[in-house]
Amino acid sequence: MNRAVYKIVLFLFLSNCSFSVVSAQTQKTAPALLSKLNFEADEFLGYDAFGYYYQIKNNVFSKIKGTEIFEYKNVSLGKITKVDLQNPLKIVLFYEDFNTVILLDNQLNEVSKINFSQNTTPIVASAVGMSTQNQLWVFNTLNQQIGLFDYLKNEYKTTSTPLTENILYYQTDFNTFYWIDAKNNWYSCDIFGKTTTLGKVPRFDAIVLLNSNQFIFSKANVLHLKDIRDVNSDTLSEIEISEKTFTNFCYKDQILSIFTPKEITNYKIVTP
Image 1 (cartoon, rainbow, N blue to C red):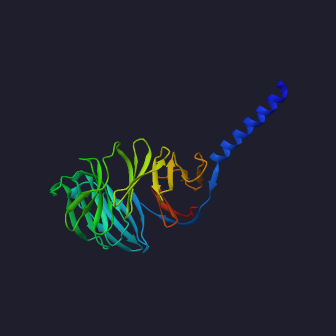
Image 2 (tube, rainbow, N blue to C red):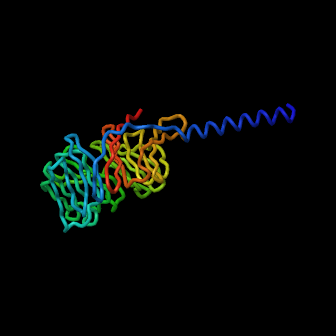
């Protein structure tokens, strides 16, 4: 091959590579705008199946639909660290500073107070979520293990082996505890203690795990949808929204909600 032909072939090869990279980085997903809601709170937490939305303002937890408002506050426990809305009939509020969980009914009445510091098994919780059969997921920092706490029997059992890295982010459903560690590795642990390595996630400002294969994350006010089953590991799908900046987002039942200091915008987005 002479030098001129070689240069042409090389140019075409590099051009094709460049095109592939650009294509992978510029895939777009355009969700359908559903509604906007004027909103002033510190944190938007999402909706339930009954049309209520949940928020935190001045450390007061609220449930709102139209003019109907329910509130819960407990100044003695400090700041609310995490809220689990999986079961709107039994809501979980976690107060990490006081190692305590409050369970609320659907009108935000307190039905149970769990102080892990008073448990017979030493527990210092840094992650809590609702599980099945009157149990809570708990990550116990004393042994660096994930466990299940039966809040009716006040019994705790570990399910995972000790974690070797700190938890950067966690999310739970009734049967699974998901977490991303400090090295951005993504794992899951089921109620039987089976731990699975799911993959690696990009650096993110905020993230929502949709299932064991997909997640939506934000970085520098840009939203992306990622499916780890994609054969091209570099492929990201940018979600095109009208908001140039936003405080946070959530996703449930194909509804993507974008939270800004003044309003909530809801989009319909169907994941593959």
